[in-house]
Length: 354
Ligand code: ADP
Ligand code: MG
Image (tube, rainbow, N blue to C red; front, side, top):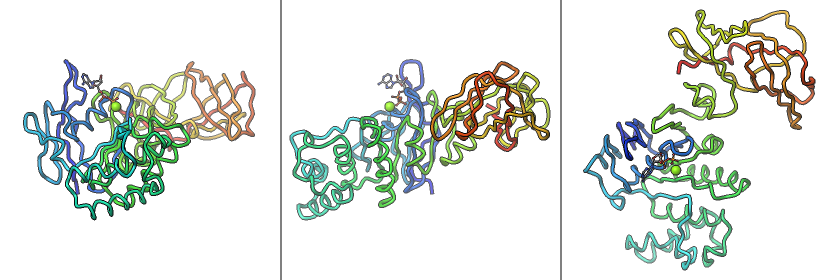
């Protein structure tokens, strides 16, 4: 059931909408990632949900009740939400225990209950042994866990996280992704998680919402977004892909130039005229010899070949002058300048109407 619903939600700064009439329905208990490049409107969306800013148009509702519309928004403290920022924003002069207890104290939670809840959330976030330390005595990852604990302890109906891992180093970031997913699985709190990192979104999210210039390009499961991107923007943003632009020639065929017509096994073709085909790097097959059968083969020349241990990375120039990128197993070693044949399996060629 839809729980957090954004309807035509809009926020304009100057003359440009930072969030442009977006519609989004979020199920209760799910973890949704807003994913997109810097400046696409992720933080603005989150701040609208939290109530730090007022929409210029549209509305937000939670559980069927409207909480925000232009000039008629509930203040943040009357929304049962907690937001975690990129900077952990811990109180430096308070211990871990005091930082976590703070939100309960201002809500006037009784002492005995307070202690029980703080202990429980510290156990959950694996911080029990750090209860008397100050933030300055903790690593970045531990501080980030304290900020999570502090948000979780107030038992918000909705948890909002804005690039919570971007201040951590790469190893820790990877570990914390799983940690966030584990914490989510324990409590199933409705969560909106903002990131510009696609693997972070793939690891944590039930639903990924790809944003671009204040608009939602696509919303779907990680698998949907990766395997069935609807636009060139999404295909490029999520994982390595080749985009070959061309024109529709037949039922499911696109002429991409240089004598190559690609038959597309999936996706949506533009009704007529210009269209594009997306194919992932690891889906293109590379062969040294001319094949004897099949559709979607094209000759090319190796422009560059790089050995990467687990695989090889090839750049191959096609007759049209376009260069495509493909990865092979490491045993396939073909020198730069050699002629090769590429196979674009039709079922892996995805036509992009947009
Ligand atoms: P993201 O979080 O995806 O990087 P933001 O939501 O922060 O993007 O910003 C979206 C757009 O709105 C950007 O172009 C940004 O410059 C603009 N913007 C955000 N906040 C403000 C503000 N307070 N005043 C003016 N412009 C803003
Ligand atoms: Mg941001």
